[in-house]
Length: 252
Image (cartoon, rainbow, N blue to C red; front, side, top):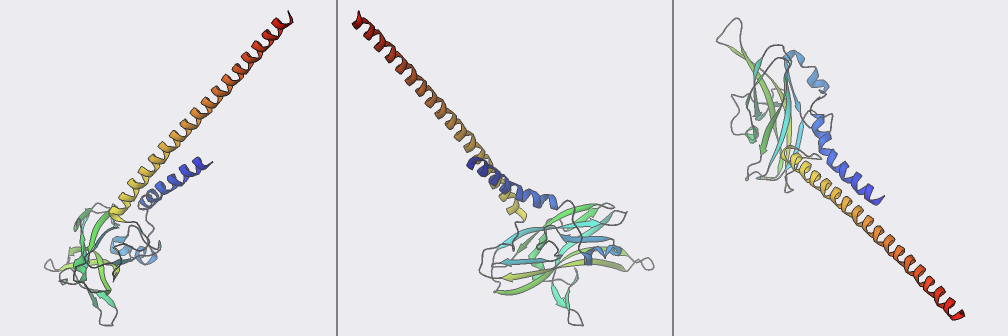
């Protein structure tokens, strides 16, 4: 029973990152994102935490970096090119949180975010996982920061080809810079998910090997005990037979 519990526990550990990976195939769009289908595209966190969140929250230390990803989708039937980038924070005229455009972003927190593929071509209806790196400068002071993760599409104005119209969606990214190790709250993400998988697989194989070895040793011990008992019975029977012969000779 103990051996079975060991095997089940290790297999459960191995299955955890697989469940996270499978969840990326069909992402349920949050209401505020799903209702933007008129924009012709969507962007959501690949591993939202909590599951219903449509934003990112990180706790990192100065000089640290973390990998994460988003799911982007072209909702139109036509192929289109999209731009992915980190947007610097600002405020609207009403005082609400806003983010600078791709052209206006400079040396702010948005530059801490870099995508592996800043320019992506998606066919009509195509969905893709896009990876990015968040790297905090070593000189960053402890405190709260924010940036935007933007997906943008541009097109020429029908009435005036000299005018370019940009449409974008932005995910809020809140960053708490502290002296804790670089992690993302409650979530195994990016390259750490791959490490977790291989470590779990190794533990599973080691446990399976140990289980086979323990079973082999138990069977070997049982066979030795059985053989020993059999030899003891034969020895006892032989001794009894010799005693009977000796008694018969004495009677004669």
